[in-house]
Image 1: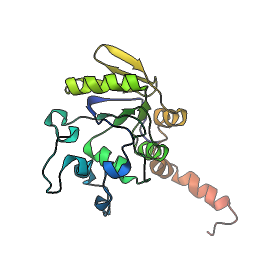
Image 2: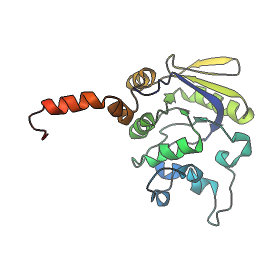
Image 3: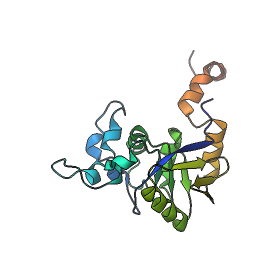
Length: 199
């Protein structure tokens, strides 16, 4: 069993816009890596830097959001190619949870494999949270995966977590690699009982 993830908390960062695809999150030219280490510095690179690599206005370049761990986005976030480098880049930048209007299905699945909840809420709720995060970069945001709520300031708003995702996170069975390693003896026992597996 892996860590149970019932809630995440931290300061927030808002990235506005619908249909932000995985190529915007991590441009393909940065995917030539053996490991995912170091990908965080390239998150949203083409929005953050011009062709001369000079910084552009972007929330991920704003010092006020250094250390933020709750990303707040709009609709269809993570669409496009299925590259797992996108959530890996966000995780290595420091993102622990994402709140948005909606997510591309494969992106949400890749986030789950890293233990990153993708929590949805209606457009009005998300916009209000983005406004709050931009006006209060040091304020704490709490994402309660188990109870499906997001709390900030003096508010607690209702959110949604996909049933299968919530169950996997809350029960600590989201990391399938760690799960297999922790049940190695049982896997070997099952393999030995299968007539088509050579011993």
